[in-house]
Amino acid sequence: MTLHIFNPEHDLALAANLSNFTPPLAARTLRRSLGYLPAFWAKEGDAVLVDDVALAEREYNSLPHSLVEALPPPRFVADRELRHLQITSVDAWGWDRAVARRLLRHGIDASLLPDEKELSTIRQLSSRECAANVLSQIKADGMAGEAYACTNEQMVNRLVGEMRQAVLKAPWSSSGRGIRRVADGAISPELSGWVHRVLQRQGAIMVEPFYQNALDFGMEFASDGSGGITFLGLSIFTANEGRYAGNVLAPESCKRSILSELLSEKTMEVARDTLTRHLSKLYANAYKGPFGVDMMAVKADGSDHYLLHPCVEINLRRTMGHVALCASKALNGASPSGMMRIDTENDCKLRLI
Image (cartoon, rainbow, N blue to C red; front, side, top):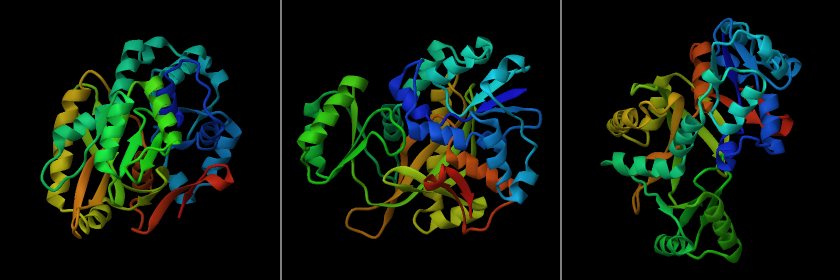
């Protein structure tokens, strides 16, 4: 049996890099409310670890009947049950020291989990600095994007002054957190304090130009850990102030049609193929599992033409884009207007509309 776990605090845990990490309330609420999500990809006979079994069953069964009927019956389990299960593999939303420690504490065999060296490698590959290095090597005609890792405040101030409109990012943080925008080329005293704290804690800060973003989307992949990379599909999503809000549920042909209004199919193919080649070398013997690459369609300077930003971030974990792909597949392709949203006003409920 495979044990699946949804740990949405993963990005915060990477930033903290602690075995004993207590997520903030918002992350704990998300984990408790949406703990059933791995049932979307779990196979019959697998188990899904949740904080509250009764709540997971109730929330899962409140999803559209057509979706629930298309999936194998899930088995939700709590921490206290793990020692009594015949678990042969573990599939986490994302791997970090905190989730590995939680599983070890509740009796999961260490041989089924990444060791400290592997966890350290995953953390390094998950940093925005790593994504910036990938960007510099895959960018081609029809594409845009710059990102620089700064190790001191002088470098940050110089680049911000040159760019005028810039975005500052912590190397590790969850979506919407750890990101600040500078609109006039000057860093305020308050922002300067934030920069100082990030540099102290994480050793660097990313500086990028601000882009006029017309569309957020991504490409979802899976790595077999031996150099094989599989493209799984496109993810078109919405975000509020950098925080995930929802995904389009649609067949791949519809998503390609939406993107073709802004970007050429050739440019998209080049980005996909170049990413696949580059990441197959980077992740060989280093990472096995799903991951997603966030992208943007950005306005070219002084024109109505759009360019592809092919690597805004790399999420070295499962993503909501993967969830949307699983939901669309189970529903046999939703209409182009279908959406999957997270309603944060009602205890983080998943809505398919």
